[in-house]
Length: 338
Image 1 (spheres, rainbow, N blue to C red):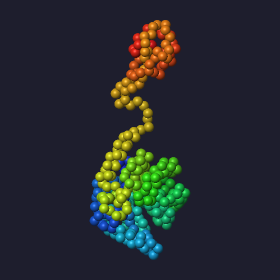
Image 2: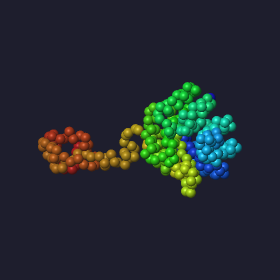
Image 3: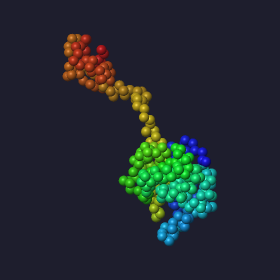
Image 4: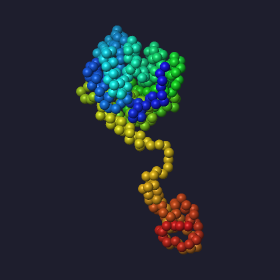
């Protein structure tokens, strides 16, 4: 049984950041290694691939073209193991979506969690194998409705009650379109998931740029997954177009650092910087008499100006003088001291 601590779904920059190389290597192992090295240098926590065989994923009689596509992109067992060792030796987690259960035994020792992609959310025979093995599961929810998500979670918990524990599951808001139109990203689902489920909630990114990732970060997404490439220009495979490069990931991490600072905390009080600056006095207003007032005269509304700085009688204390008989002489626009 997997031992999972409370910080399992977290990374160096706050959320667990997963660079999805996926199929961006397009079946070229040397290119896969190049992308892996760049992803390592970008500072991510996890580098993820996809493990499959064309025949183990797609029915070659019903979908022959898709079958050929995946056969072209598949890497060998030894190549995946080399990539896994490259990641681990660099202090970065290796992970892969396993789309062919025949391959799980030899790669399992390199995985700290299982990623179930959106397309497999309803693939109960596949999910059951992972659940029985008992490592944490990262579940993407593209293509699905709320009932299907709840049904799958219940299916997993029924197979293995250990998945009732908070850190054994993480749910990813995801839209399975490449690219995803802005209107279909639906980051508010993160809030809904947080209200409905006790598990960690994350976001799987398929839109242009990094703005959605920044917003997901502000919403408290604990896992952020995005596709990774070396460059988008001149690429024909669709996933490159929605991928981030090394420099963009480094920039994103810097943005997270600033966002965290900007968000601060939920405690509201006058800050030391505000007090030290003198702004509490210079920005706030006090009450000043706009003409000389003699002892015994009544002070009317027309006699009072509310002006900066807040020296003398605080503006909140207007009832102390309005309509009252003056007990002493006052000079215009001088501090009022009662």
